Length: 284
Image (tube, rainbow, N blue to C red; front, side):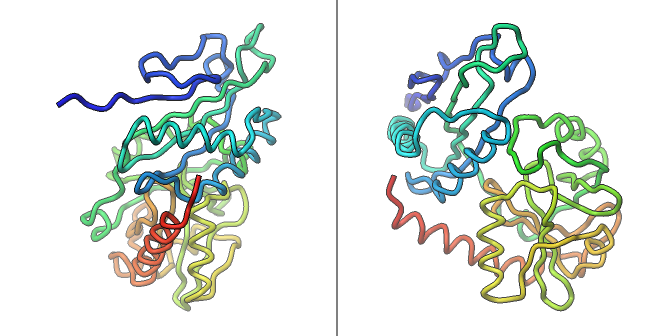
């Protein structure tokens, strides 16, 4: 059976993926200059798309990159790709770069790329076991912007694997911030849910989990130290591609009972319910 062709949007055109290319003068290639965002497609519909478009625009503004399409025009492209690609479980990435630079440094008209990729969410085994993470001394440049610069996260992949971990948590002077692609939450022994407030990307899943947690528990943004993490009753991460994933070990310190906690798993159920409700009413 022949697979369905994959299409992408590149600089104003919808093309088969194998033809979707950028010129080598693009600043994403020359200097790694650009921003992006990523959202899930569930039952053929984008989930929380307005939030992701708003964050893309905020990231673009931080890097002085104009978004040349309106939200309605972006939604039309998204819908066309969803229709053409027919991927039941997928994610869609929107990349905005500094464009085709004449001298390899000065920005030009931005290049907008939108592509759709298959996506597998964490399975039951991972949710049942939880994951181990390590820590590293680092703060991302322009933390509020979702830039395409993932040099540190990629450079640490070998170290993460060597230590039998799944991800790396950034910290500076004992204050934690975020993972390369995820936000952090802790649950205190008093059932307070806290996520770091500074030097973090404002994740859409983070925003939704904060709101959901506030309906059941005390929930807030604030300073979270490494010691807070080590002493927490529960720790978990959030992201578009992982939803909520329990963390049972940080460095060599077991968290709580060493197993995924009740608060974490209850919030995951609430988040899945919210996503399902949103997909039923969302219109592109």
